[in-house]
Length: 140
Image (cartoon, rainbow, N blue to C red; front, side, top):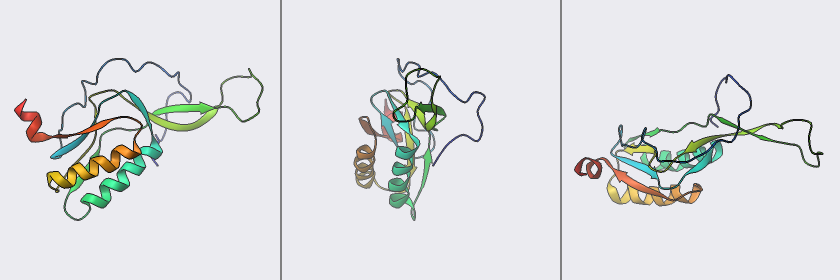
């Protein structure tokens, strides 16, 4: 699973997820991209589950890119612990995804197969997503 090699601070505040994604909102590398439609936090396990689906679909014919990285630590206190005594230990890592962000890109497959991959990936993610093609993007 994905996690940073080292970070400046071990623990972070939750922060806000307001606004739209301006950076990373265009399909830059592949022919198709999976775009987020809602703000959400995506865990490294969810990214890995999506990677396995995309790898299976484009392994022989194409290439894929993961455009998000889980760099936000999420802490959790142990079960049955009293209140107080500081923040818990880091439990897992998440990526903050704003609406409009292209999370995954791939090429080497046709549009019907790409729609099928998007449907499978959307079942693994906590938010609504849609397929964005480079041709459709350049027309707008």
